[in-house]
Length: 283
Image (cartoon, rainbow, N blue to C red; front, side, top):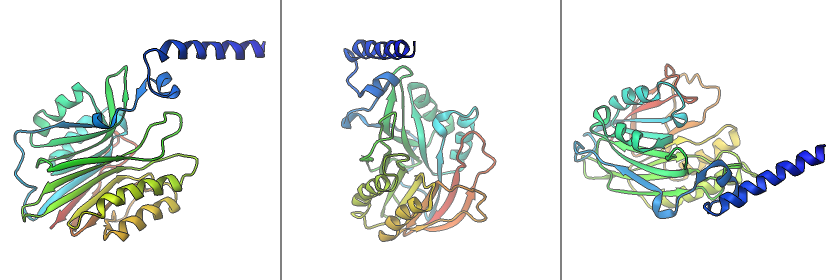
C-alpha cells in the first residue's frame, strides 16, 4: 500500500509537470508554485508623481525603512500611508506590486512620492510581483538593481538590491541602496557574502553621500559581521536604534556623509513581523 501511494503521488506530480511544462518555462518548483522570475529587462517597475519636488528637501530629510511582510497584515496600507506621510523617502522590503497596489501608491496618500520597484518574482495567478521598492518626494535620477547570486530554497528565487540616485539641494547626488538579504542557502555565510560583494561593486564607484538600508536577514552575529564589514570598508557607519527592544536585529540603516539627527523604531506597528524604522538625516 505504501509503495502504491508513493507511485500514485509520483505519477500525479509527473502528470502535473507534463501538463504545465507546455506553458511553463520556469523551474520545476516555480511551475508547481505558480512563480515566475522575470527576465532582466522586466525586473524594474515604476510609478511617477506629477507633484515631485525638484530635489530632496534642503539640509535634512526623513528616511523610512520597513519590511511589510508581503502586505500580509490587515492594516499595512494604513500604516505605510501614515509613516510615508511623515517621511521624504521610503525603502520597502517584501514589497508587493499589482495594478491595485500601484493605484494606491499613486493616490492621494502618496501624491508626492515616485516609486521604483525591483521584482524578485511574480505570483502568476494573483498577477502580483514581490521585491523591494523605494519611493521619494523627488524623482530618481537613475535606477539599477542586482540579484543575489544564490537563490532561496524551495521557491528558487533571488533576493534583490535596488540602487536609486536622487538630487540633493546642494547639488550633490545621493545613492540609496535598498537591500533584502539572502536568507537560507546551503552556505548561509558565503551566500550573503556573495550578495554583499555585488552590492559593494556598485557603491564603491559612488564617491558621495549614500544610504545602505533594509532587511539584511542578520539572524546570527557572523552574518551581521559580513554586512557591517562591507559597509565600513566603504565609509559607512550604522545608525543605531536607541534602547533597541528587538531581540533579533534583521533591519539596519548605514549612512555615509550624512548625519543622523533622530531615530525611531515604530514598535507600535503590528501589521508586519518587522518594525519600521525612521531616521532624520542632515547633509
